[in-house]
Length: 349
Image 1 (cartoon, rainbow, N blue to C red):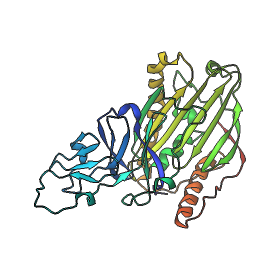
Image 2: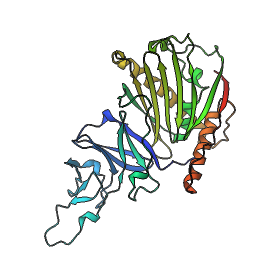
Image 3: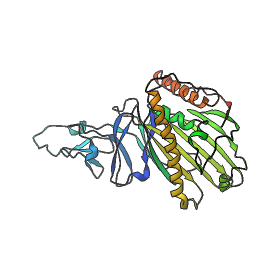
Image 4: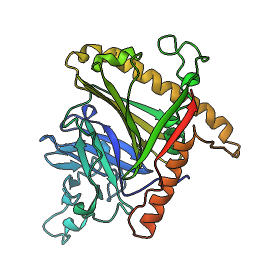
């Protein structure tokens, strides 16, 4: 389904990547977007094209709450995108500059990530009261991520999403001396899944006592994995002492490439000392997923017929059904009806 969903929030970049008074160009859903942070700390997003001569506004600078175009010095408010100054005008010119406007996007900073909302028609003014809230990780409040990583995927976002949620590829793609050294110790996995508002979740279950790394969180640790449209996956570990979460989101650049954003959160007070190691491991895992998807593109160039099987590929099937239902609900202007039903999935891995 080579379609990018609209009326959704997407991550533009981690908060730590954007300093006060700075601007960053991003291509998102095929559109040029300028994401910036005012000196008061508030973030904003607007179309990265000056309506005068078309030069990207990223080459300009910020003056207070305005963005200035480097070509002719035109200024645009970061609040609503309206033109506030055209330096070349004189008292003899009769031009209502407030009618000149750069389209803006709703932009929010939540739990250490900057999100941008893409409506069906981004050139029309949006009623902010009608848009959904930004996705958040429950039980983590305003906590900032301990680490944040960005990886570029040279593929359509659908392939990145179903690749990252695939439960059967681990022994083959994530096989390393420090993680998995062999492929022969397969066991049957049996997990209960149920629907959530715009997706599905792995119902929380207690980790086996043999999973020693998780004992950092306490003697009793449960895991919950939630996926919701358009591309938000949270993996939450809750212990009787501490909690941790891995947030993964996919933002489409266009129909042929996307970015994966992964943030790791924890409530362990001394975990900061291990940030370099955790960053290395996170990048290693994402690079492994990215590399196999790049190799996959060599075969997809020939437009082969593809297969999805039960039960290992059921989550991928659900993703496409959710996406199809979302598009129909939007087109028919009706509430979304989740097609996922509670089910136990079994696979060997």
